[in-house]
Image (tube, rainbow, N blue to C red; front, side, top):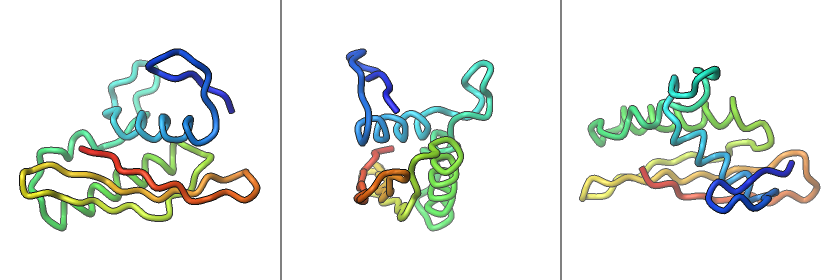
Length: 112
């Protein structure tokens, strides 16, 4: 599938398209898209929560669930949140593109 780079307008496909799609679905709050209210994730709502195990589990559920629902051409293999001492967090994802021969695992780190 070919898409458009959100910054340059140039055509993109393959892994670049997957990375952009994952970033888009995770950073879009549910209910913010007109005519597509269910699109997005609960990740933006979890940003200011305490850094504990409960929040970590909610982050995993929100991220993996949104990716599984809205991005059909990948399978989530690992989703692990990490918090730093200064309050920042990052989500490490390992995803496997589906529908291609000899697909390799793609590792992404998404700050939140």
